[in-house]
Length: 122
Image (cartoon, rainbow, N blue to C red):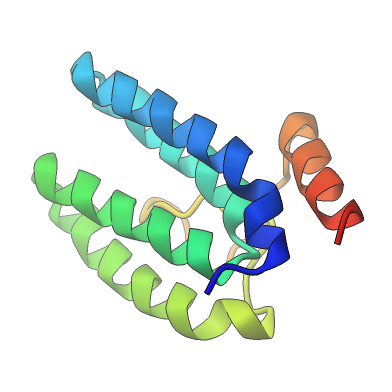
């Protein structure tokens, strides 16, 4: 079930996912993952989007034979599915296995504006 926050965030996350798919088509794995990270920051307060983006990061790890990222994403998919609804997400965390899943990180102005706009219309 998708709640109103998830619906409000959807256009912005879907834009990042389209950009990620384009980068994948062009063979640019780093840019693809960067767009997945952007989608993660924007959507991490929605259980639906949080799980979906970690799932896409897991698929990225499989396609790119990244064992470290694979293991990290398996744990993060589980964490996103069980912890997001109770608010246990570190704001700004980019979601990759290269950072602690507990690390709070700065949110850039564009992403913060998107999040605030989505929450304002709840």
